[in-house]
Length: 72
Image (tube, rainbow, N blue to C red; front, side, top):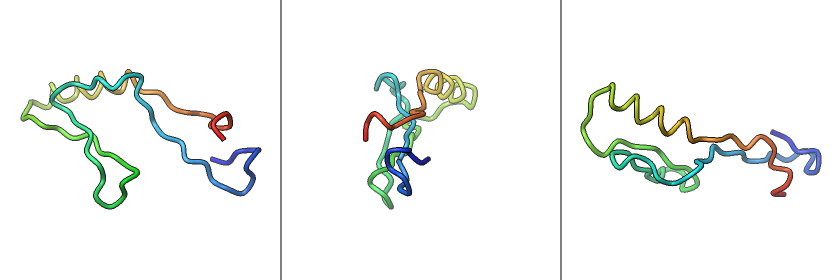
């Protein structure tokens, strides 16, 4: 993504959660290769159906930053 106010330089855009209250069976862990990124991991054994429900719940609360111009 490029910004008109920052020509030629990339702008990092991230998915953001509306709130930090994810299901207790899920947890964010830092990427060992890049400490700027996190993985959403499963901390408890569950059925695929339960996992789908929990991931859908998380996805319903996510937003996309479409324009980071205000933050520059």
